[in-house]
Length: 149
Ligand SMILES: CC(C)(COP(=O)(O)OP(=O)(O)OC[C@H]1O[C@@H](n2cnc3c(N)ncnc32)[C@H](O)[C@@H]1OP(=O)(O)O)[C@@H](O)C(=O)NCCC(=O)NCCS
Image 1 (cartoon, protein in one colour):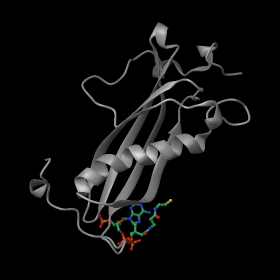
Image 2 (cartoon, rainbow, N blue to C red):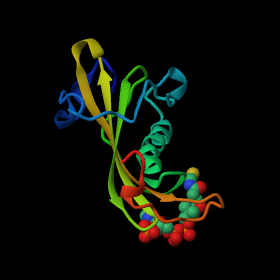
Image 3 (cartoon, rainbow, N blue to C red):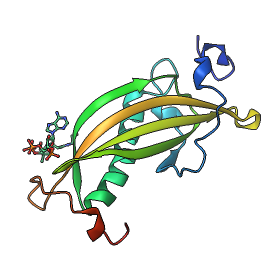
Image 4 (tube, protein in one colour):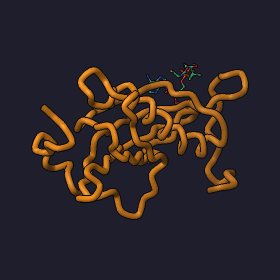
């Protein structure tokens, strides 16, 4: 059974590499007992919701306005998430189309924080569409027109 006290069930290649250097997470969250499933681990749907929010943040900045999620292209839960893990969500734009923006999201859990155990728990790719006030697709603006670029 997986538990915070039994890290031997964690995939070795995803442990103790620390948080990505030189990058800022879009979100940092700590799941609560109310976010757990019937087995006591964190519900996958809760993680998916946070990933969607994290991915939407760079997409919204790049779109310079509202976006809608059109597709979850891939979603891998590499390791379980436990109540009390400190989660960091990193989101990078990997493709900009005419109206769409595709974002890769990686989630790391700081577990047993006093022993500095960091585990990559989730990786996903989502596509967002820039939308206008009628919720119709609009062109992603050229990057040089963005005030914050
Ligand atoms: C987002 C929305 C406005 C897009 O309108 P649409 O007419 O379906 O979109 P289009 O066919 O014009 O495609 C828009 C872009 O999405 C891309 N796209 C369409 N389907 C896709 C898919 N399955 N995966 C990845 N990208 C996709 C298209 O290639 C296009 O990108 P491009 O302009 O960069 O080439 C519309 O689909 C919508 O409102 N969906 C619901 C959004 C929503 O509620 N999301 C939250 C769900 S809980």
